[in-house]
Length: 127
Image (cartoon, rainbow, N blue to C red; front, side):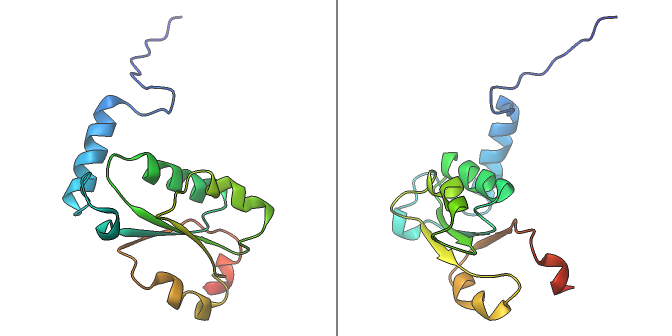
């Protein structure tokens, strides 16, 4: 029994076609690859130190489109922050907030053009 695998993926699991679609989608939402740093849209990633959040940040920073990332974590000095800090540069920031305490989120979300919610802990207490 033979298996026909027509997967044209690179080592990240992204096909060239998917990358083109991804870039087209980013351009369609107003993000440009030539955007000056000060005008680049802010993407706030809540839960940025977790596996999914760090993967989102990695993908944003690897994009040809310029974004400023606001990585939201529970503890800026915690062990898990290294999961995300390795992908950030001087345009980005790491801020503390707790999804179980909505009062901590208002300032964190201010100025965000896009929000990615990748937090898991404590979410059930919100509903």
